[in-house]
Image (cartoon, rainbow, N blue to C red; front, top):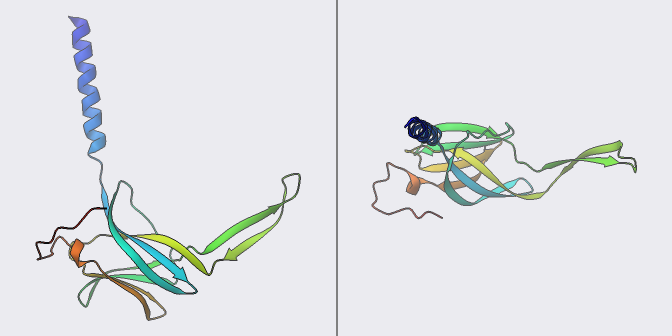
Length: 151
């Protein structure tokens, strides 16, 4: 009888742990697949991503504005990841030189916080608009009955 109670208690504790771990916060993001070419940025695609960890961007010269019409919901500074750091090593494995290489073209992804009332995402540098993408179809306040396809 005591063995059954221990087994039952073990099962209960296991299920409680599974439920607690499943209850962790999920963060919703727009995942922007982008192309960078000599200072110009193109947004190739947008998807919605659920992540279990908050995403941070390196602050830089570019700006993302999440828009609801003419109103900026949030503005985020970011850096294009087009710099590669490298080390030169000798035959013994000692670092003898190094530096960085700036790439003129690169494909990269940005994770931008989701807002239920967002209509567009705009990328700007030095007050010049580089890219604009309609995200209204992902909005939970979208009036249309159109279903968003999951990829």
